[in-house]
Amino acid sequence: MSFFNDAQKDALLTGRYVCSECGALMEFEDEWEEVLICPECGHSVDLEHYGFENDEAYEALYPSKEDVCED
Picture 1 (cartoon, one colour):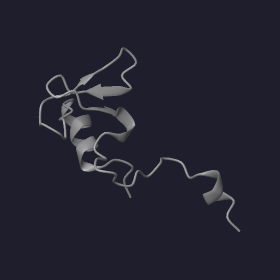
Picture 2 (cartoon, rainbow, N blue to C red; picture 1 turned 60 degrees about the vertical axis):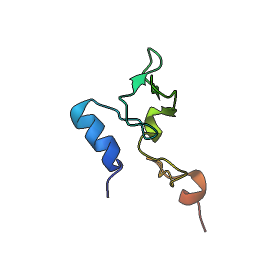
Picture 3 (cartoon, rainbow, N blue to C red; picture 1 turned 60 degrees about the horizontal axis):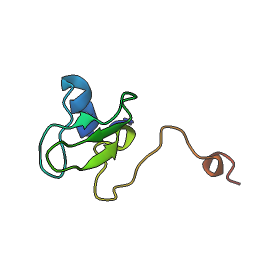
Picture 4 (spheres, rainbow, N blue to C red; picture 1 turned 120 degrees about the horizontal axis):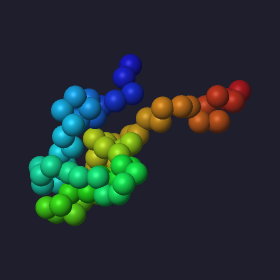
């Protein structure tokens, strides 16, 4: 099981983040490198959600309290 999707893996290997809306290269919006923004169309996404588009399920790195404490 991988914590990364294919888009995240590609970005980690190449250092290029591609906009899912228009295909342009995305840039970091701020100095903390937490949000990616496309300079062409303005689409933005949190870095940890990059590659999860169109309401795909986001699988968190750690389980929730409810998952751990289930009876």
